[in-house]
Image (cartoon, rainbow, N blue to C red; front, top):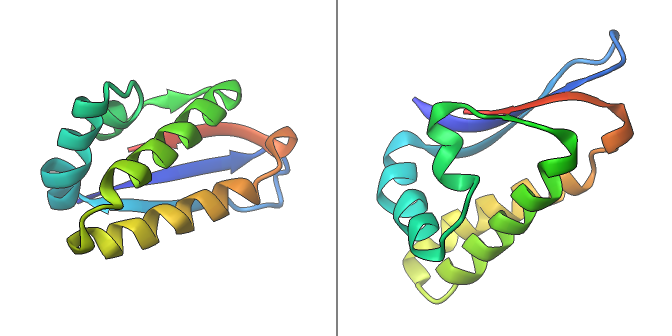
Length: 105
């Protein structure tokens, strides 16, 4: 099992976008403890599959940045940092006016 961001678009001819976040093991051993330590709101909810309002995507993106900053000091987190960079790049490319729904889980 894993955690991913699923974005649906308003255009019916456009497929949804799925962005992998973490395996379940990595989520539980790295992401969740770090998010709790930082007092984040959204990252701890990812396992439960929250529906994210388009207006809240900026807050979610900010939490990814905070996670990246907190994990950057440990070289063992290199692959997680690469994943976060990929997530941020993918989210940056999304036109929010075209989004009909966001689900993370």
